[in-house]
Length: 150
Image (cartoon, rainbow, N blue to C red; front, side, top):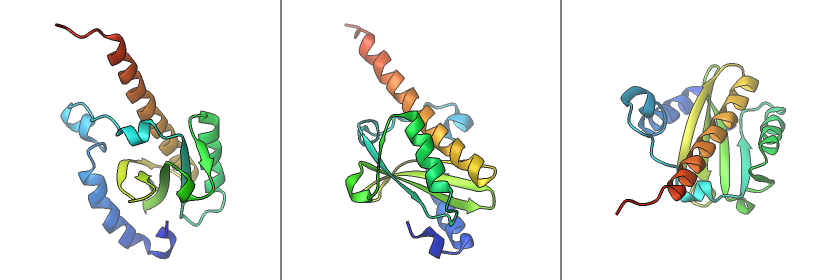
């Protein structure tokens, strides 16, 4: 929310441990272990608030447009009205991070990162979030179809 007031070296120092300790960043690629499913709060969410404190005026509209094309979430103008807060921040030069947070307690449910220009990075972040939700929802549908073994 207030990331544009904090110099990028401090943001990088704060964000790096979160990314390294996050169970979703790199866990499946490095260990081959299945990634834990997204929490129900994320899968049941209907609305999001987009927080792009990057200092680029065109980025919030780009991210909102990508979310609207997806059609999964309603975009709210205030975080108090949204089920989730999507925060996009710059980690280091040409590295961008998406945090999917709880609106009330700011708990991070999921995060991912992308590299490239700010435009490329934001598109990649939203697309990555979409793929993750789609994969979890497909997994849930498959589990509901598969009969339980006695």
